[in-house]
Length: 474
Image (cartoon, rainbow, N blue to C red; front, side):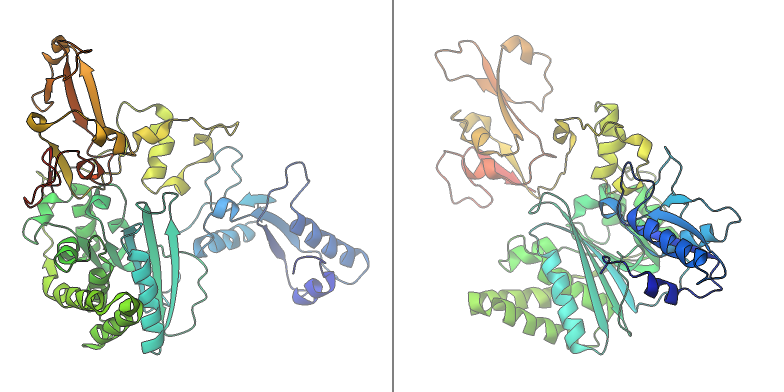
């Protein structure tokens, strides 16, 4: 649609009263005087003015947007119009980034547009927990069962399964033409408890909105477990705060880690986007359609999870900030390099788009080995090493793809000042005489208990025991 460029149609679209024009290019051409669309518009207007086809020549400024998939929302558009209204606007500018090197970026004002959507929602999930599939089903149900329009955007990180997923949902009485992500939501669902320490989810809630947290803690004890920063934001927003133990319901219904059905029911029940029992009926039909090919037993287990979800929702009354509650922990260790603390940590916390240009390496090089500073802390259960039964086969160490469990052979002298939590035993080897072996498990690194499943000891029927060498604890 861009080439060939039609100067005739451009001139017809711009009335003689036009005083200023901003041309946006979604590209950057190093070495060129300006970007291609800007040059085409300037040439078309200048030639029309020289040939007498226009009596006036409007001021034209050029800007870049959307590079590296940066968001282009209403605040960016408002910033451009504010710049056009200046007596001497910048001839070149960028929007969507904070450029403190060339100072070409425009300051973004607060988005003051009136709300047009009936409901905007955000769902924070873990790849493979079903959160994205649940949101897609929600869109289908709302679009097919109500007179409203629904829209969804889905953001993934590079890890696919086990990585962060953020689902953006809009519901409106009119066709939705918002080609940008949800910034402030009426409903925010946190499907994984560990996200509460890492991501700014409550901050993206509209005043009076609903915040739903999947947590093993009850409504009476969860408030004290929240970071003080989250407590303050929930109070400031006057949020309606609800909790549900979706993981427990999923396990009871034989759904393993697939909590999507439970969280779907909770969303519809709290928002009342579908009246009465309509949501339950529509979800049951959607489950039957999705899982009937896998057997009626799976369908009925998901139906059971729907019923338990409504009964398990609990509202948490807002309380003053608890001084004994923990603060939000740092994303990376204090021992990390400066680059990891400033750049990598912001990216891990989902705030990479707010980084200024000056924070990035000017030559484009990137340090290697930074993954070791990422501690996702996503394991719902942790293995407990029983050293008195260990055969020292090291199958658990070899099986862990994340190097979360390490076995070390050390001298007894090195263990004298070791903490009591570091257990050890004599090495069963003729080569390593008078040596101890210790096993260290990095809880915040591992996503699962693969090591316990690979234990070479015979498995027993004891509940929660994967092998004699390991117990599994929440």
